[in-house]
Image 1 (cartoon, one colour):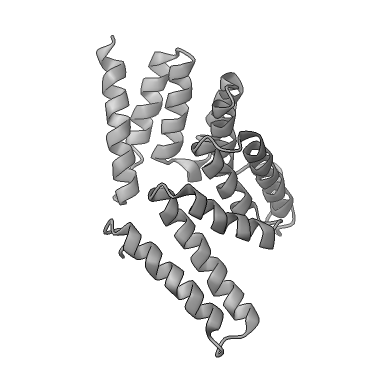
Image 2 (tube, rainbow, N blue to C red; image 1 turned 135 degrees about the horizontal axis):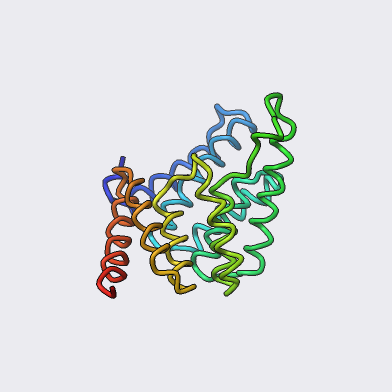
Length: 211
């Protein structure tokens, strides 16, 4: 509630306090403590990202990656945050590619696995495209981001925003406009999405004014 109200510092403080309380709670078994602590570490890492306290965010995510080296979510998130903040780009790319590989392996083990309909997570492909863009591998980044937006579960303004930025860098103005406009069709009421919406609208207006 505090997070959605924009009181990020207060939200982070509460999470940090609860993490310490859980660690000292004798009523909980060790495994129960781990479940709660890991959940709250993950939650607070996202808040620290919004607060631009990247060191704190990556500290929590690095803990989770070390604890669960075979979890694609943690690997992807840590890699993406590094990439988004121009940090450890080579290591970020390795982590994200690892996340994609891990996710593929896990999907193949599911009972409902069908190779004909199976596809990679658009969110993970977005991360890969974004770190490649940061590494100045723009054409390769475009390929992965185009695959990312094919995933119906990845119809998110942030991913279209990334695609738009890559297309602008490649000089593909009309395609960039379409990407930004598609992003604006996929905006939730969350505070984070609304902030992204304002940013995309400015980029779109600038592109259209250059006609």
